[in-house]
Amino acid sequence: MLVVVAGSSGLIGTALVAALRREGDQVLRLVRRPAAAPDERRWDPARGELDPAVFDGADAVVNLCGAGIGDKRWSGAYKQELRDSRITPTDVLATAVARAGVATLVNAGGVHYYGDTGARAVDESGAPGTGFLATLCVDWEAATHAAAEAGARTVLLRSGVVLAGTGGMLPQLKPLFLAGLGGRLGSGRQYQPWISLDDEVGAIRHALTVPSVEGPLNAVGPAPVTNAEFTRALGRALHRPTPLLVPGFALKLAVGEFADEAILHSPRALPGVLESTGYEFRHPTVGAALTAAVGR
Image 1 (cartoon, rainbow, N blue to C red):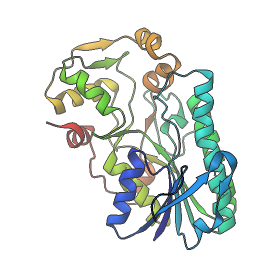
Image 2 (image 1 turned 30 degrees about the horizontal axis):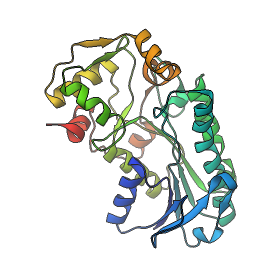
Image 3 (image 1 turned 90 degrees about the horizontal axis):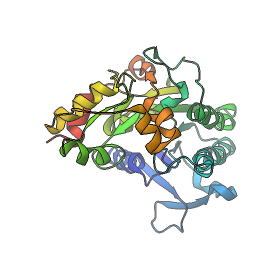
Image 4 (image 1 turned 135 degrees about the vertical axis):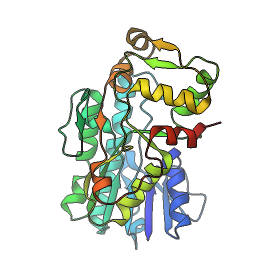
């Protein structure tokens, strides 16, 4: 299989490219600087520049583009960057997939599509929520329509927090927990959707290789946990107590709107499509995922 990957330099993209190659697949990586390796092809989505020849012989495209939602405080300018870094590349790729007749598009997305569901569990049939992140996810998915309308099998990932020792959230939390400063956030009752890096990559490979998988796919672990449960599990993985509590108002003062939408909201998502199509989780519990990522 020949797979074109956009966003290949990030945490998930790096792991995905390595996994595809281990399985004997060919990979072309789209980069925004001058191509410096045989497997790289330059593109400029902001200018709509993408050589159609990139897709010659391609079986699938995986789009992982997007600025990190927690990388900066949410100013008006950064919220626009969060939108532009996702929707523009997706639109360019979906149009290219449609024109080239590529069979499959797998597009990144998030479980924040569902907004704050509280304790109510939702699978892929759940309705979209409200708020900045939910609207962003809805518009991000809508940008794939050109590919779907042209007949490409289009898979819309809705991923939870990816747990890895080499990037994402855990390397930031680990020093605090090791110092005995770990604790729940807000009430701790909000659900915190998670998935191990191995299973995030596994879910993408599943989407690429299982023809019946199409449309939304919740890339989350099968055993949802609250923030309090996640905090205790991370403490156990690091053999540290987690006595502290960070009040919600303090989080809002520290990181603003991000706290409300990404930390204190409770999207309790279930991996209905993965389970119904036979995916076997390598890390079916948050404890297993955390131990694999940062366990001592």
